[in-house]
Length: 334
Ligand code: AHM
Ligand code: MG
Image 1 (cartoon, rainbow, N blue to C red):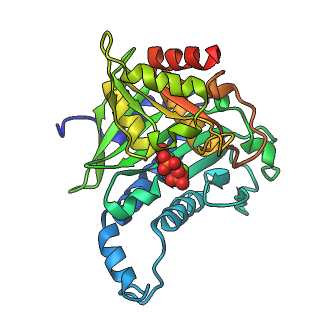
Image 2: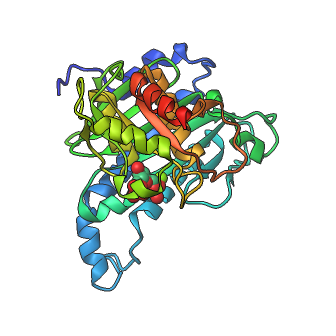
């Protein structure tokens, strides 16, 4: 990586004025996420060691009980955001309800709510495969000065002011959008600094990778089955390549760079699929659209769905535009 590249800190300052509401608060919030990302990265990197210690009685060297990494990541993110007093509420995939942040001196003056999936794909940790953190930021819709309500969290994805993910992979990256394109920053672990390594990321218009848990094939709707057969057919530039990590962030990240489609359809055993609208699908859909890609539940735009509950699930198809259009055609035919 070229150290002459801008750091994330520099980038945030330079782009502050392009935010829709440039009071500096959103910049502070993204800075807090940057910090939490480094803390969680540190924890994820020693996951193998933690497991060894955990196996010998679930007590670590400091005599503290071992925690599962997703619980730990959840705590670190919430703590970092709480301590900086820049958000009025947080909802997390790991928590049943939302958390109201009430800093006495500010008295509910903060404007932003954050929704996070602290460690997505966490079953991959045990086997040393990439995982990610996903975040989504909205302005509250209830008036400042009052505690946040469910209404502030149940906004359609189109209202997001920023969203992104951290991928803990062969290198650690923070990729985010504030509605003005998508930029990716790689962590230089030696000095703990994120550098702009992937400016203005874009999905290729089409691609040759499809990502889906094909083990569930028998349960899929006929339209999705037909699309999978289409991907496998020897015709034109097909058969496509199948790649499924089972970690949404990693599958999405690869597909955005190389061109491809990620799918988690509804099935006969899960009527809305598996992925959560608020913590996973909305932020990833916002990034996809900002990178010239597309995200749908099979029929309509993910970002226009009006959520009805915090942990709502939706079918999800996301990636290169032409590939998403194609699977929608197959679904519509059924
Ligand atoms: P999680 O939030 O419990 O980790 O689940 C979300 C993950 C996604 O990252 C991934 O794409 C999907 O679940 C994999 O599910 P499956 O094992 O059913 O294919
Ligand atoms: Mg998840």
